[in-house]
Length: 421
Ligand SMILES: *[C@@H]1O[C@H](CO)[C@@H](O)[C@H](O)[C@H]1NC(C)=O
Image (cartoon, rainbow, N blue to C red; front, side):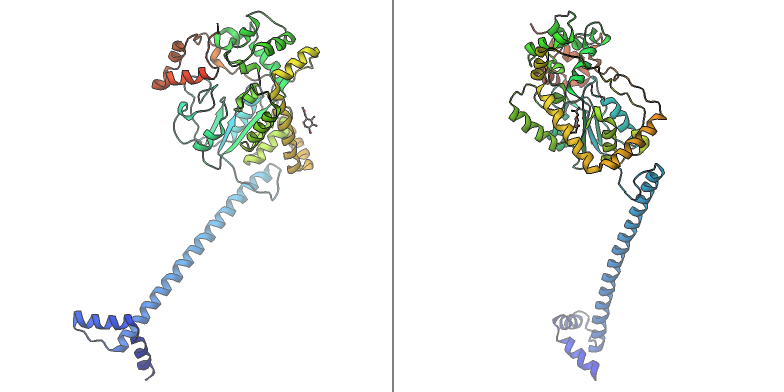
């Protein structure tokens, strides 16, 4: 009578007792204890098998996913092996980035490289509206003045605003920019904006060159001294000849205190994943490839390399003027050149040297031309010569109700297009 004994034991459990009494109460059925026992045991077994089954399903789904990932990695690494690199070094393509396209720094080359990395069908990028700059330039980037939506990529001439991007872009976004040796950058701007070039026709593009030179031709050496004397934020677009790169990266071009400058540069460094250096374009491209997991084809596209300038010997006076005028850019360049080479050390000098050789051989077959970046600020076109806020607002009419607000924002940031009296 073993089972009877066990059934008795189980019947002591409250629920069994409850089951029995409720069955009896509602249906008038009096079940033998043995049946109750079987019902209880089969329920428990049913539940147990359910739990077992579900954990197995989860496990197998997990295994399946893992296998799929492995397959993806194998595919990518096969691709890389095909391109002759990184055997056994897998990475996953990184699609989301913000590229701060500084002016006159070879930044267009990098743009076209990044563009070939983008997935044409899936990429989400804000379209430019009616001006060549976006986000309220020369004010710091403001999403209020950009096309609305969720974007994977922001690439263009704008003024970096790390906090604003952090608020609007997903956390896995990479932040990339490029800078150039400040004196070459300055010369490039001088040649671009000086009188009689196509660009200087419009009122806006004459700023601040026209203000500094009174519309006359002034030699580079004298221009540096003059610019250092007169440029400040009351002059439209003054930053084009005063710490232009620092300006585009969101810093204040008027900083003079070295302690503050260094502190701001350190802060900026934390908000950028990669600062490329034009003078070390090859190393920079390889680091970029590494950062986003790109293909060799992406980075060995023929690009527009900025011109290397012949050494210009300045008088001591002009040299000192330049050190004062471009102080933040000089500090910025020194700092980020050092961080670039630290990154190369982390990457491995030998590996870098090999990769540079590979890159060169791939570029050679593509016949890379050395020339200045394409003219960029189309503000200078004849149809754009606003001299008052009203005219500027009209020019920004495609921003609808925001036009007046945008005009204010630009003008507050030395972005008006008028000659100050
Ligand atoms: C950049 O840094 C490297 C390594 O410290 C140095 O050799 C090089 O001269 C620097 N380049 C420039 C243009 O300052």
